[in-house]
Image (cartoon, rainbow, N blue to C red; front, side, top):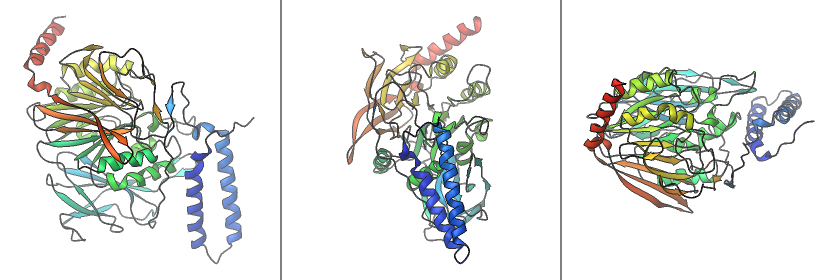
Length: 478
């Protein structure tokens, strides 16, 4: 018995991609045997649809027992440039003064080169060559994926650039060298009407770096959705660096054909892991404007015998709080959560790694996964602790699965604010000792500030560091 498709709306990207490529192919092949081409394309589409029927997990979203509000209308962003022109352009930080520019072309012969400079209109002062890759996934073949590192770049400076020598000119602004710096923080983004609303609200006020704690495209093995997502976020991700970590929707394992996972994520969104001594694109760290930011992997090994654990110990040991007085961690599955959704899914990682973050006096930990917003007090080992990190769940970017509406009762004294609404967060680090956190609810046409708090860095609390020394001595004596 063939299972039925319960969410036919998710077939839209495949249908659109098929129609667009069919149209381009017929135009190129005009004058030849178009009738035969149409018949062949029809057979391919029928075969693909039949395979989707056989494997409904490819198109069916996860069904959970907890309550969800319906998500917004799905958005598929089409490809409207030529095959040679860049699409899905996004940038990310590399080292202290370089930027990686990534994009995709349908043309396999397009060059992996970026021209750039501080003057607008094509008067570029520098040029960098890079590398390219591509991948196959089931019946899907990606375009040519380009990655070019440019720099050195000046801080707090506007640059203009062109990818591959063709197409539109893009621009970005580099982060400042010192404080203040502002981060936009959004988790579980997806590509719905709520996603578009969130990105519009984020863009309504300037910021320096975009942080995303996992679940980007919600492709869930539907590879054309990675292309659609790249085109959707390009107007934003091409102007400010996007620093991301993986979530469960990036895994994309298929039995037999795709057993390892993260193929699309690793190919499309390379992170500066090598620069931070990591052997994996799934966890890394970077420094920007007095802040040390650590991206952890919730869906790779994290026990005390794992490479990620060993790397984290080494990375935290290298942090210089005089150079980077703020330390921030991002991961996907939250360690603290009073929502009924995804209860306990981050617990094993917490038990393994929480002590490392506590002893290093990490200031903040951002997570996603739960499609709602929640802010905790400073916590360590399930107790309020003035020397522990402040935990924030920010998995409300606009995903297609909807909001997680139900919270546990009574309210935990550790949870200071919680709300199931779409939105985004902003972390403005003012100086070495103080930062301001705010959560902006998507309220129709406006982003409404529903929660905000001033935060004092742990480096400024001498009591925490004295306690740390006593703890370390006691640990060594044991």
